Image (cartoon, rainbow, N blue to C red; front, side, top):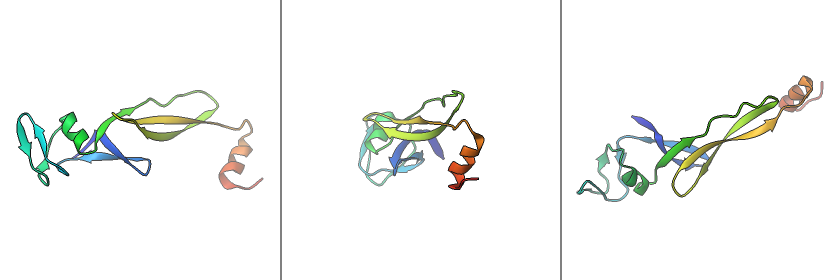
Length: 105
C-alpha cells in the first residue's frame, strides 16, 4: 500500500512511503520496540521520520495567465514540499513551437 502523505526525496523526486516498511533501525512506538529488519505498518510520524520519511506538503499550482508551471520538489528538516516554477509563455504561439522543437518555422 502506498501512502502519499509521507515520502523521501531521491534525485529530486518523491519516493512515497510503501507499507509495510522494513525498519532500517529499531523504533519504539507506544512503548513497544520493533527491531531492525522488522516489517511495520504505521503512520507514527516520529517512527517514519526515523526511517527517513517526512510528511509531504503539496502547494497548489498557481493559475496566472501567460504562464505554465513546472513541478519542483524540495526538502526541509521536517517535510517534503511540492512547489511550482513559473515559466512565462511567449506571446507568439509560433515561438512556443520553436521552443519545443528547437527549429524556426
